[in-house]
Length: 299
Image (cartoon, rainbow, N blue to C red; front, side, top):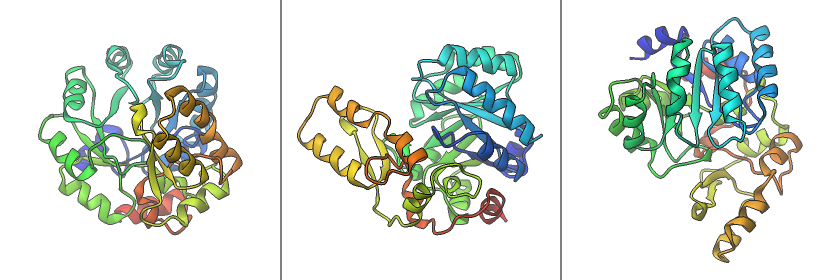
């Protein structure tokens, strides 16, 4: 399955780099693709002009295939998809929403669409709408999460659809990759491990937060909002947990979190930043190149 998936995407190893807002930019995407994986630029909440710059920069850094991750909640969604159609990118992954109405337009220019899903029902819907594959992401992952674990989600999705299933959430070493294939996956998506790569542009303190994390340090906040987030425990997460217990309004809670991810990525603010990372953080102890990371995962 992994070999067939690699042939379809024209890559050496069946691994996608996760689309992480403010983290997954041209340097990281190109480095992963050059190492034999599939690099991804995260459009996040950025305008199409920024994304176009990143696409052009990535093309200068690698001749290998790469893709773009689109957060469907972005206010720039329409112009982002217009840009992706114009550039005929190799792959578009999506999260935080339903990309159904854009899939056919992308397929017409040869782009493969791979939505990130957290349930069997959504996987079936994406297959029906023409998705090339789905990323079944368990709640062990960093950032916005669903409810099911990778261990239970992946095999149920595999049994429910005919398209390739990529496992994500809690995968950070060779054992996780092998387990994913045993669950029936055709490939894996990895995010947190690549944050601790030499080529990743995040602040050094972000990498240090992950490397020093213990098994229970990747905590979840904001469940009552309907879009819970997993990040490394710090003063911000403790404050957010307290706000939830105090049952503050949704508006007050969200206002408190605005800009916190950027504070982590760009400023390394260990008190007020949201250091999004998966539970696999407890296994990560070293910063290595993307090439070294991928080879450790597969060879």
